[in-house]
Length: 411
Image (cartoon, rainbow, N blue to C red; front, side):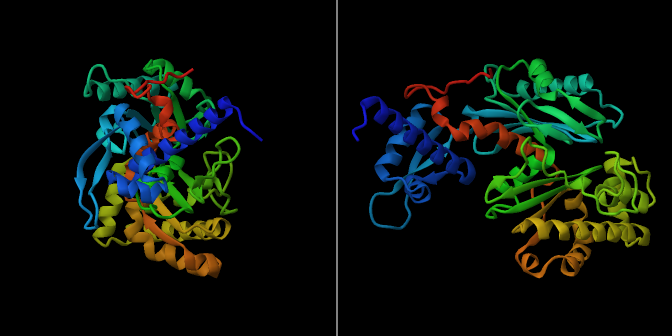
């Protein structure tokens, strides 16, 4: 069969787009690397790399620097790096106790960030959207006046529809069917895509790309705060369910004789491992927030029995829940984020004991449990990664004909 010129051209352009995506993705995840290393990592030929990098240089997405000598025969290979400040995203996060903002350049460079406390009674959508718009304005005021982010990523402690940014249910915020994406897009008025996702899913994405889960394609990220959320990545891809509602492991029924949960059920996992129950067991007010958590950790470090007992009990239930999830998901790595990364030094032994006792031997041997390396900012950084995804998937759509970077507006 002989293909017509138009069909050949379409196929050629499809290949070019895929190859540009492969190059930009490698640079985004690995940092500056030589042309020779790009050949090795992408499988493309030297001539293809030379041509495609030239397109990206012309589009101001990448720059080339002095050649790197690798100690091998032949001419040294030029170093290729992303121009971080030529493609910047805005990341926002709504946690139970705080709001956060960051401007992040391509390649993951955090250019500026800020986190502010949020009163738990301060949960009206209009108030939070207004506060986020103020934080965004503060972030943008520290950037060049003519700069527009290429996208906005938002993390929230709730069940989120990825299609339209609707927060279907956020029990710890008191939200049901809240159109967060639409309201934020209107308030920010940036005319760029605004993507909203669950904070634990974004924490998983950030730790997978830049933190404790790098190098593992099958991971479970468990984020603790007032509530408990989970992000699951299988074979390098997020597992979030048909509408993005998956990963609500905090509402996994675990104790039939347990406490009432904010979701309306009884005995959910977060009622045994969440911030409130830890504080109650340690003798602090359940709504004491981060200051009370810090006090519990200080008590534990000083050897005070009530704090140590409270942490051990949380660790026991944490291990019980993880054992079931390890049996179901068979992950390579479990990453503990948020509250759980803070308490990990005090609960690690208890968690491992419960895993040894309750998980099946085969998946247990393969899994490691580690604290998040990105700390409480993992969901915020994951929001930035989500905002970069359209550019990573198709850099060609953002480039003019061997010219300047093109801004894409949301529909």
